[in-house]
Length: 113
Image (tube, rainbow, N blue to C red; front, side, top):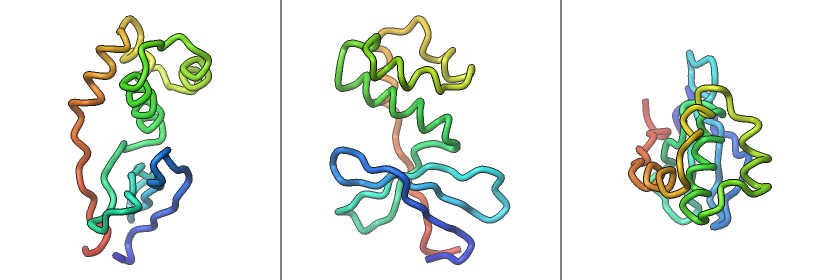
């Protein structure tokens, strides 16, 4: 692994894949990556910040269900910063799900400099 990066798992999705903080040299805040448990190519970038990760999780949730006024949503929504709340407010679950589906996750090279 590249000695300038640190990968620290902090959560798991329902499929056994790991969400990890990716600490890189000269970065103030870690990025969040998804490391697939059955794919050896390496992680993919989910968000450039933890706030972005929370937003990603809510978009993903909207793609699974139509109800975005349930307790799950309310418990997570409260932790979003204003930027991400503004991206959600006034939108339907379908619109949020479309955003999630259109977002391509990019590979993150942790193996070489």
